[in-house]
Amino acid sequence: MKRRKLHRGVALIEVRDAMVLTEIESDSALLPFLGERVSNTCIAVQPQALPDVLRRLQSLGHLPMLVES
Image (cartoon, rainbow, N blue to C red; front, side, top):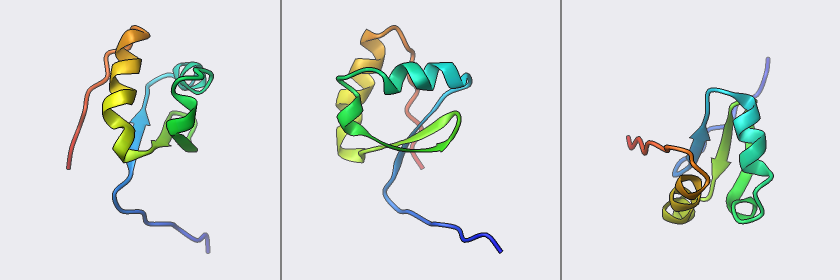
């Protein structure tokens, strides 16, 4: 049986196209805030860095949508 991890207080970036995530990972301004990939279209982000990450994504021409639960 495969082991699963459960994390609390995690922020994620999810994109439709894996190439977009590759572009995000290659940005030196975002790299310090990124964690490991959860899938080919999803990556963990330091929650406290979300405002900076959102601003940077907007400056790169992305249209991030913040979803809170």
